[in-house]
Length: 307
Ligand code: RIB
Ligand code: CA
Image 1 (cartoon, rainbow, N blue to C red):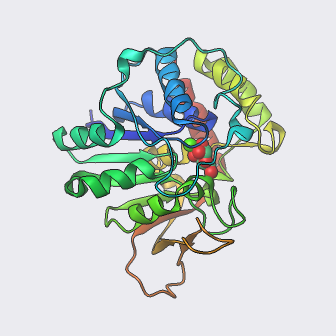
Image 2: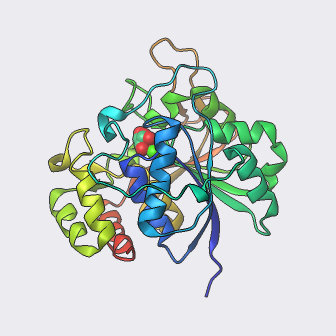
């Protein structure tokens, strides 16, 4: 049997984070070494408790480390209007197992996990990039031990938080700039694919029947606001784990990406130079399209593997 890919998930659950974490934890191809939390959809405390609740739900003993409670420079913003006040409204979870919560902060925990792992580790950020930026600045020696950073974030076109900015990047553009200019191989799964990675009511009704996880996700989906279930719920974060497990699902452009920091109206924009106007060396593989039918079938099969 092929060796499992060692990964760290950095997350801000978040209903779509919960789907991505479920798929990752029950995939036979991934070895989730650590889950780190970052303020994003809701506060650091809430996303951390949500992470522990999910692990309790699945009885998975994965170490969890708390990271940044706010962006590097800018004031905090959240997405409780989309995910509910708790960040995972719609299901009455048991309290999480606090014994999984490490004393170390996310940066220390990621550093120790990466440096102690025999193979290179893949990092899968599915929230704002604050923790990852701090890691790369405090411990630049980890760069040679990171296989790649496969992140949900950004857009080659318009935004979902700002006119031109996607939420994870918009929350902490300075952190994103540090990550994209780090020299570490990056895969960007942004809105171009997230907007097409949809769960419709008929899909959600099927998912409900699979197992406890499907039943729980169905309940969360009823509260996942945005444009609502009937228009298709966007499985943004699952695109990152989908790339890890089935990259052939995506059309990918090898290009240069930078982050707008100073635009009064455009801060947080991922400037994706698909035409090479900036004459910069490529620094990212950007997912520019997704096979929607393949994604849906893959997601349903992946969720059937959960408990
Ligand atoms: O723009 C979508 C991203 O913002 C997802 O990670 C979602 O969970 C929210 O954090
Ligand atoms: Ca997220």
